[in-house]
Length: 226
Ligand SMILES: C[S@@+](CC[C@H](N)C(=O)[O-])C[C@H]1O[C@@H](n2cnc3c(N)ncnc32)[C@H](O)[C@@H]1O
Image 1 (spheres, rainbow, N blue to C red):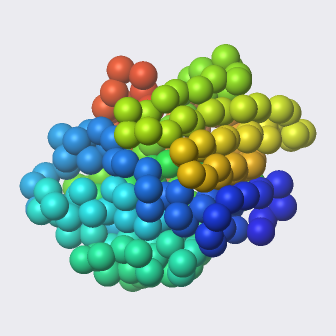
Image 2 (cartoon, helix red, strand yellow; image 1 turned 180 degrees about the vertical axis):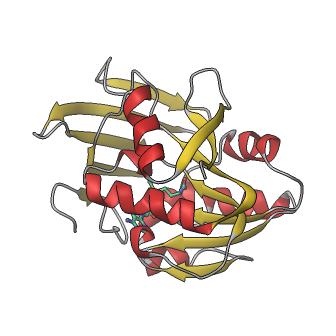
């Protein structure tokens, strides 16, 4: 387990505190629709931090080709129909490029700024000429109004129970997922980034915002700056 990260609940837990069983149960939301609206049909997608394939499977159904990357072999063994690569995103160098590189699940807010730089460089290194990088950021009020919870219609409650400063501009966040028969928690480090800080981080990696895809600016389409 990475320092500052922890997960509890049934089944295998990844180094960043995610539970494999939990992600196998979570329904996919509107993410595949946002992605499909921003990229060409049949695009070749490199999905970074795919987990069990919650989004991967929905993207495959829409006719995209997906290469799914995750550092957890336990997560990847549940991915069906996609090429899988096990390893740290920040060190990935496949020697090939993709129409779309996807960095979702707020991974760009990872607590370790060096890992974030590595992740964004991985995005830049793998995007084809004329292609794009799609990033899912935290909402700008993600660390406010805590605790907060949402009851999902499929029958579980997700709660951001706390978000406390842990030094160096990083927060320690605790999330809880309650199902009728099981509870999972994840504690992780998240570095809030203002829009300006986020755009600077992109620039450092040789990327720039093409456009924000959603009104809340959570989803971003970035392109090569060179
Ligand atoms: C919160 S889960 C989200 C999974 C998936 N994107 C989804 O929405 O269902 C984050 C995933 O990213 C992976 N991950 C986190 N940091 C990583 C890193 N530095 N390199 C590779 N995988 C990483 C974890 O193992 C986990 O499967």
